[in-house]
Image 1 (cartoon, helix red, strand yellow):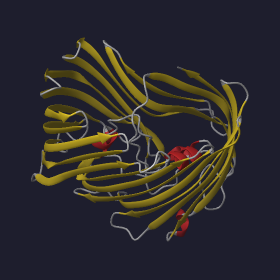
Image 2 (cartoon, one colour; image 1 turned 120 degrees about the vertical axis):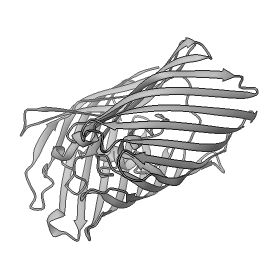
Image 3 (spheres, helix red, strand yellow; image 1 turned 180 degrees about the vertical axis):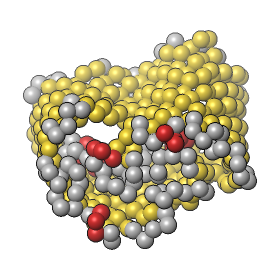
Length: 431
């Protein structure tokens, strides 16, 4: 992870949950050019070699609710060109959902794309050679029936294709059909019941790993200016092409509470059956910040029981913002691979302060622990980073950063440390 990406991970936070009122319609973007230097590009225990990366990038945030188009999305793309390797390696973490109104308020056609950078081997160091691009594209019609003042029915059909750059076992097609009935009992509260059915067809294995999934879910949502609650409970059943069916409960719980305008607490809990492709498509609200966890579940065809919790706190002052979060993940695989991540735990703390009207500082520290399926190996990753920003004009600014990444492990060969620095010229635009 480069000096620029690392503070983003710390300050956005692994496991941070955002549940604020969405901003008004906007299109904001930033583009930058600059350099990252690291003294251990291979993340080697023996120190490795230094490398200077030319790393331009671009990020965006868009929200538009028009008569013909509804668009929302958030993301970032980087290109790293190494001095040791002349190849160009684009990487994107992004989500974009665009709904085209064939009949406004009644029939839409949806286009959805989710991109993420994932580890090839979660047990290997997070160096450029251990990262791969994953992507899920989905499209299909959405039919709305009824009235928001009484009962609203939403029927949706999606076909999708998921790919991984270096793991062909992950590549698959997904088909989803869902029907939801929602009752808005008052302006801040709703109840809904939904039935979803999906089929996953892997492009390798002659259908032996394919499966079908059915979910029955009840949901309650309540949204107030200073608090929000969303609860979904249901039941999931997965029928693999080979082997017995699996049935498990599904529970989602999200809470936001702001006792004062300057404070916000949030919590998000999940307990459900899942798979790597489903996780990639779970970014249903692209306005939430991404979790830059370098090591996740093994990208492949595994089905697992997921237990997850995210806790967050934010304080906003006149010139200072403080953020803290913690997360936990437990994976119980039904057909685990030897590299599978069994559990992860982490916490982060970040501070942003305006030093002057034209200068800011971001600082953060994070720590994550990892355990692996069928292994006694235990790792702890620690990150520390600081960024300085200086406005040159209302559109242009300079950003400089330093960071340190360190891995401690009971497997001595897996340990390493790396220091990095970055310098960028950035342009911000939009409306």
